[in-house]
Image (cartoon, rainbow, N blue to C red; front, side, top):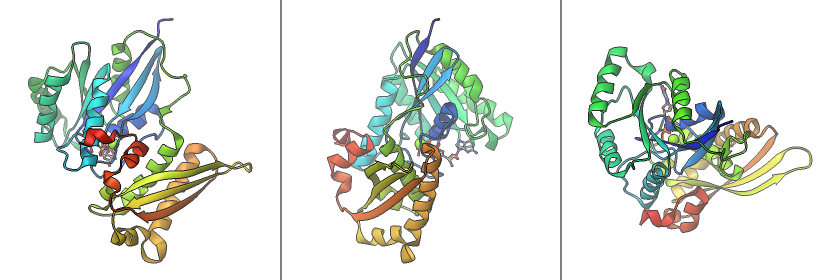
Length: 302
Ligand SMILES: Nc1nc2c(ncn2[C@@H]2O[C@H](COP(=O)(O)OP(=O)(O)OP(=O)(O)O)[C@@H](O)[C@H]2O)c(=O)[nH]1
Ligand SMILES: [Mg+2]
C-alpha cells in the first residue's frame, strides 16, 4: 500500500474559522472556538485519516498586526506553522471578502511560499452569503494570488469540507504515517484542558479581559475511582480583573468551571473534578514560562 502523509497549515485572519475547520476535519474538538478574534494562541495539530493518507492539520493563531509581545509570538507561531507545511490553506471569510488584512497575508505568502509548497484557498462561511457574491470574490482573490485550487466551504455546517479533505489527501507527499492511526491530536492533555477553561472564560468575559489572562493546568490526577481531578490557575494582570473573573459571590468562575468540566468529561470520557484558582500576576505577559506553557516561543515576541 502506498501511504501519504504530511502537514496542512490552516492560516487566515483571526475569526476566519480555522479552528472550526480543524475540529471538523478531525471529528473532535481539539482546538477551542469562540466568536471573538484571537482565540487560538499557539499551533495545534489535529490528525485526520482519508483513505491511505494521514493529514496532519495545523491550526494556527490568526494573522493580524501585532502590538504586544504575546501578539507577536502568536503571529510568529502562525507563520512558523505555514513554513513547515506541505500544503497551506488560506481561509477567507465569504461575507467579509478581500479585506486589508487578507491583502497583507497575500503579500506575505508571495515572499514566504517555497517551490515545494502548495497553496489552496478556502472561502469559508458560505452559509452567510449568496452564490453570486462567492464567484466574484473567488475571481478577485485568484487574480491577486495564484492559488492552485479554490474551495467554497462552511466549516461549521460541513459544506464542501469532504472535497477539500479529498484534495488535500492527494496533494500530500508519499510517505509513512507520522502518528498512530488512532491519534487525533498532538497536544498534551493538560494543555487541552487549560484551553477548554480559557474558551469558557473568553465566552463569558467582555472586552479586553480575555486577552489579559492565561490558564495553566497545575495538577492532574487520574483517580482510582475512574475520575480525574484537574487543578488550574487563571492568571490575570490586575486585582480588578480577579474580581470580574470571580464575579458576584463567585458566580462567574463557578459557571466557567461547570461548563469546562462538562466539556472535559465528555472529551476524556470520565468524570472530572475541576478546581480553578484566580491569581493576580501583573507581568505574566512578559514571563517566558507562561509562553512555554502555552506552546509559544517567548523570544519570537522580541
Ligand atoms: N456562519 C458560519 N460561522 C462559522 C463558520 N466557521 C466558523 N464560524 C464561526 O466563526 C467564529 C470563529 O471561528 P473560529 O474557528 O474560532 O475561528 P479562528 O479562525 O480559529 O479564529 P482565531 O483563533 O481567533 O484566529 C465562531 O463563532 C465560529 O462558530 C461557518 O462556516 N459559518
Ligand atoms: Mg482559532
